[in-house]
Image 1 (spheres, rainbow, N blue to C red):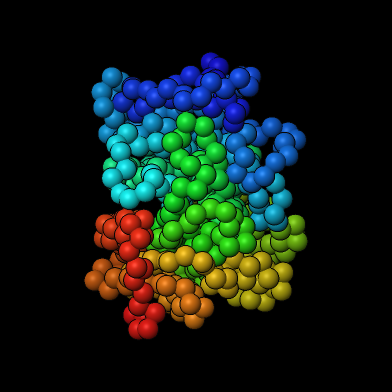
Image 2 (tube, helix red, strand yellow):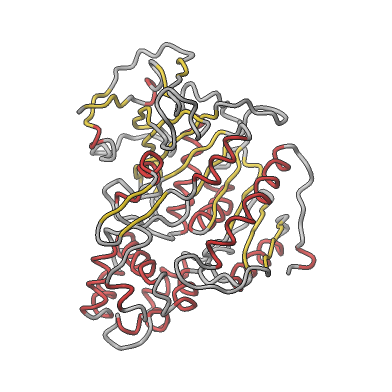
Length: 439
């Protein structure tokens, strides 16, 4: 079955279908030809990529967000448009990324014009089926015997939409699209987030002006992405009117993350995703890993590349990374001893650049996933450069392991506080900062 894929100048030529079956009409009559592409081909970028600036829209189509019934008001209060836009990869080369723009059905009640939330999602996995733009219409993705993920970010996204804020959700590089998803890559994720905002602001009929207020927002993988976007905003996308960045439960140092969590079965596949992304992004990494990993390690990387965030497989069966390496050393030690690996891992670390907007960082002190110590270090680094940083440190959630651990539980108390902080930044209230006495 064929679906209508519109060029960026032809988006909204007709109507956009709302979640609950309503529609909005295009405010302009666009005359550019409509591009016809099979629905399954939406995620295949044109080859070669057309020239243009990062954020330029390559194609777009109306889409549905799940949790709604035909003819009934949608539980997700927005109309939805899936779009493919130009971005830059970890090597600053042009690339194509898919995202979803969500146009709220309720009015913006705050001061000024409607704002845009550039939403960076949490960990979904590395398989193309895990892309947020696909999960938003499916909610649950399952592949037997035990590979399953659901779109938990809808909790936060729905709350933002209910406040009248527009939201654009990036898939990041390589989720849904052909390249390997470069999981926890600082630059690639930051570029994808900032360019998603650029794309949404260009979308005809979005109701947003080019200078609309923008908030960077993310938790977990999304926290790293929003933090990276905050650091790169001054140099990469200075024209965006970014009012603040929420950096929730971020992984801020990939190597520290691997060493800290080594042996935790629930997290083990993420190490493989990191290494797969490194191999895809840096040509000199593949030969090093080929020499350092044993057959078990190589099999884990191959299997994990097609999995979503809660797989059951080789990584869990060999959850200590010393079982992955030819030397019997854990991965963190192998990285330390390899100049090639050390260089690319150091490149992923947050805290070396300076955001030019207020930042809220939330972290549980007992977080078993995104450890607190390096997050505190990033907050201190940004504070030392004059960034107004509020570090919310939750010490009340006890240390828990397993699939529902401290990292997951900390998402919920941080949700209300972060969205109030966002509302205050959009209202122009002075940004709070506890730089003088970080917890």
